[in-house]
Structures are given as C-alpha cells and as structure tokens.
Length: 341
Ligand SMILES: NC(=O)c1ccc[n+]([C@@H]2O[C@H](COP(=O)([O-])OP(=O)(O)OC[C@H]3O[C@@H](n4cnc5c(N)ncnc54)[C@H](O)[C@@H]3O)[C@@H](O)[C@H]2O)c1
Image (cartoon, rainbow, N blue to C red; front, top):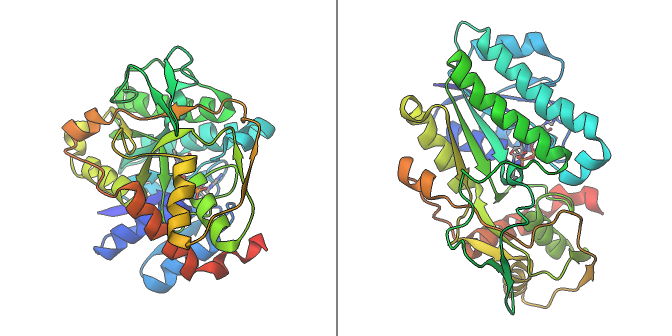
C-alpha cells in the first residue's frame, strides 16, 4: 500500500510515518512545514528512511499538487491542521482556511481522482463542546464525572465550541458525509489528548509534552486553574494501532466515527503529571498557578467502548510508562529545543 500523510512532518504524522516505514510501506509526506519542529522531524525521517518521499504543499491552495498526490496512493492519513484553540481565537480565518478549506480540498481531490483512496481523519473531542450539563465532582486530587464512569460516547450531542472546535467539527462531518454521498471510504477518529516523542508541545497545545520539555530545560511552568483538571491521554503508538486496524478493515468500518483516547483507564491530571515528572527528574518542580483559561473543561474522558469492540483495539501504554518514554526522549534530544532558549 502507498500512504499519503498530510501534516506528515508534525508530531503525529512523523510517528505514523515511522511506524509505516519500519514495516516497509511506501510513504509520501506532505506538509507546509509551518509548525515549529517540523524541519527537524523531516530531517529525522529522511536520514533514517531514505526512501520516504516529501512534497512541500499547502492544503489551502496547492490544488494541482494535491490532485497529483492522491492519484498515487491507496490511503490518505489527513493530519495537517491548525491545532491550537488559542490560535483559532486570535486568527479564526486562518483556522477556518486550514481546517475546513484544507480538508475540503483533500476531499475534492479524492472525489475527482481515478484512484479514490480511503481517508482517515484526525478529529477531536472538542466537537462535544463544554458539556455543561454533565455533573462533575471535585475530589482531593482531581475532577471526575459523577454519572459517566465510561466517559463521553460518540452519540453525545455535537456542540462545537471555539473556532477550532467549529473548524475541526465541520471537517469531521464533511469527511463522514463524503462517505455517504460520494462513496469515499473514510473513518473519523475523535482524538483526545495524544502525546509522545517528537511532539514539540507548547504552552497552548500539547500539555503533556510541554510540561515534560519545560521540566527538563528548567523553564517555568504555569498551571491555569487548580491543576486538578483531568484528561484521558493516549500515547501516539496506541493511536497508530487504532488507525492501522481501521485501515486494514476499511470495508467494514468505512463511514464510522470513533472516539480514540486513553479512556477511563488512562487518565491523568495536571498535578499527577507534575508528580510523575518529579519522580523521574529526582527533585521538586517549581510552578505557578494562574486563572482558568476560558473554555477549559475540568474533566474530559472519552468513552472508547465502540473502538474497543468494533476495532478490537485497546490502549496498552499507561500514562506513567508513556511519560517516562517521553521524558527520556526529551532528555536525550535537548538540542531540538534550542529555540526555547
Ligand atoms: N495532538 C493532539 O493531542 C491532537 C488531539 C486531537 C486532534 N489532533 C489533530 O491531529 C492532527 C495532527 O496533530 P499534531 O499534534 O501532530 O499537530 P502538529 O502541529 O504537530 O501537526 C500538524 C501539521 O500540519 C502542518 N500544517 C499546518 N497547516 C498546514 C497547511 N495549510 N498545509 C499543509 N500542512 C499544514 C504543520 O506544519 C504540522 O506539521 C491535527 O489535525 C490535530 O487537530 C491532535
């Protein structure tokens, strides 16, 4: 099979590319290299896997290139995107153009192609909005749902919140609908917090990576809110397995939407992450508290029963193991973060 990965030099894209290249698949990466850290991800892949192909393109306007690319592949992993809620609030048009128009351009390229490759899309739990009606309890160390032990399922009402929520949510529905209307094979993955190696987390996006990087480099950490916020977290290797299973079973799962996250068994609060890192680093971290960020949910946990049942998939890497892996990667690759000096 030949795979096209849009956003192929980003965090998830690089990890997916590596998994595929390791087992000998043909991979074409496309990216506009706008995200910090992407050139070093590309160099890393090209040095380790000389057969990988890279095509510089911007999803918003390089339509001819996109058309040529989809004609060459069997599978499109669509990961390119504007990824931060905060940026989407400051630059809503840019967010709209990258996430909605960019996705539409890829879908149109597929629809008009001879090859009509399948497409898998990286959506987000942000499509469920603030979920203000759900009762949340505060315990000594963390928040938790009172009545939803399994978390939020896919049939939860859609309630796009923030320009990012709107643009990802619109793309999520476009992908699903192109399956229905144009018979394009697709799967939508509503991802929660994904973390792992080669993630250039910043304060605005990628908190697990950011806390780890900041701790190793001795940068100050700010906790917005009281730190008891809880997320289900999924290591990028576990995420890849879900995508891979869906790809291999596309004839049965096409048109489906799955929540893919750590689920109730793999959750972590901000304070718990600090605690894991302190154990690894061997001393207490210094951090400060600041006001809650607008729209920050006290808790989000995905109900992953549907993916577990239909894809026969389960996350395997515990948050403690995953944070340890990430911590050692950052420690060994401090030079990649020189831009933070
Ligand atoms: N990381 C997470 O926790 C998470 C959670 C839910 C959903 N997602 C989604 O998964 C996808 C990948 O996320 P990531 O964490 O790897 O982010 P990332 O920022 O590392 O990767 C996104 C990539 O898209 C590229 N890109 C941006 N605009 C582009 C454009 N106009 N044309 C071509 N390329 C462009 C960037 O250069 C970058 O390489 C995103 O769509 C994101 O919304 C991520």
